[in-house]
Image (cartoon, rainbow, N blue to C red):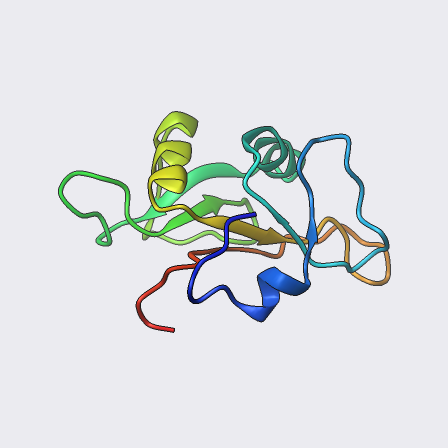
Length: 122
């Protein structure tokens, strides 16, 4: 987990997942990771593909990172990118991925967000 001057309570209260072998303490638990294998596995289990929001790019680099998730995150503004481009941007911006594996009732969760511990708008 990456921390900084504006690390959110969401990050600080989430369970850190540092490898694909780590498991949530309970269904509905908020999780946080920077591990590429964990992120890729979570996305692939949901048929999600790495993406950015069109129009948010800067100087030829990916903008806001997201996933193209069929039936969940579909939008004409979502532009798919490669995993290499997604992770390069994720690491350059020193982001965390906050996510859930399951909802409290045990159903698969698609919740996620990227967050910078040094964001300027905090």
